[in-house]
Amino acid sequence: MPRIRLVFVLLATVLAGVYPQFGACAADDSLQPVFNRMDQAAVKFKGLRADMNKLTHTAVINHDDIDVGKIVVKLPKPHDFHMLIDIQEPDKKTVQISGTKVDFFYPKTNTVQEFDLGKSHRGQVEQFLRLGFGSNSKDLLDAYTVTYGGPETVADQKTSRIELIPKNKDLAAQFPKFELWISDQTGISVQQKMYEPGGSYSLATYTNMQIVPNIPESEVKLSLPKGVHWEYPQR
Image (cartoon, rainbow, N blue to C red; front, side, top):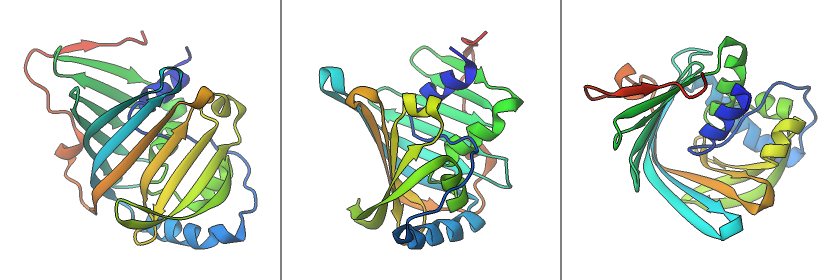
């Protein structure tokens, strides 16, 4: 499996979204208020903290798995994206993303698995991670056909749901549709849904969100015990 496809699949276990650059298209007029809020948020976005609840539905066996944890995002300057996802239940694991490196720490085995996509995929990885977290209307229109899904309430917040159909055929074959619920107050996504072929999907909901301009570096780095074992599966 090519490295870029591999990491998309890996990151899809904790969140959703990726959009390589393509030509823009016109937006539905009903989307403009949503895009205005997203664009305003994107200009000043530097980071956030939130609680995360992620439901993964496997259609073939009609089974749901639920992961509960926290997420921290840091974007001190353009193209310097960092994220730490700490899954606390039911199986502890932590994911650190910095640049093109993705590290998965499994405390039960005291093991870190590291994947490095290389500089050529840096833009794709950044845009994958920024879906709903500081992305703007141009980012979305460059890569998706975007439609307005209507107003909905998510975790006691008023939101606007938008649907995204990837223009990239390879991406669409893996993930044919995404949905974002954009907060009417902050312009940031408070819920993300990623569809897979066959009816499976992942639904991540973010609560107790704090938009923070100065996230400490320590909050987006793995805290590892002594004797941790490193693995490099892609090699």
